[in-house]
Image 1 (cartoon, rainbow, N blue to C red):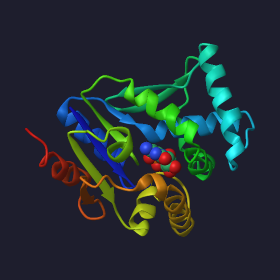
Image 2 (tube, helix red, strand yellow):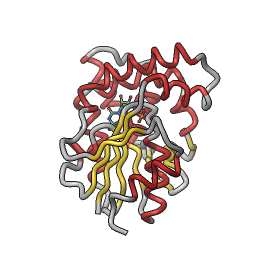
Image 3 (cartoon, rainbow, N blue to C red):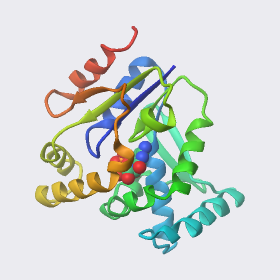
Length: 214
Ligand code: C5P
């Protein structure tokens, strides 16, 4: 069984996906974390990301890391996804404002999308995949698909609880990321839409589970 949970930035996807996956006793895969990890690696190496020419050097870097036995390694643990590299958990470095600001530029590079998608498709179901295009592109034959949304204000208010930032600038940055992500954020036509703006996390998880076989 494959379940997909897609949605806009800071819509609560990871928390909902993690709760639903735990209830189903399956792992969840955060595709966004792979995009973040590749973006982080590019920034570490001073690679520019804002032009189509960025793709070649970025893919070369990812390939070289794999060849050297130090690939970006997504670990879909039940308590939360992690990315490890060279024996080090780099997950915390992936949720900075700097990675937030560059990840959408990296995510439009077709070669990077193929790199992420190939890693996800190599995994054996059952699992729950979380991201932007899991139901529309990566797993179009998934058994159950969900799309989460909420207003930019609600999402910004949620995010400032996690990071010491001002709500107006977070809201503006989220809107900008929404605009850049829109190409890969289109919901699958058969996805069930859920507004995460009202209701507690356990209520939203229960709403999703209500659509799934017991
Ligand atoms: O889900 P999260 O906000 O961590 O994703 C980070 C970024 O990765 C998104 O803003 C988007 O640019 C990109 N992404 C994507 N497709 C996915 C998941 C994430 O383009 N399936």
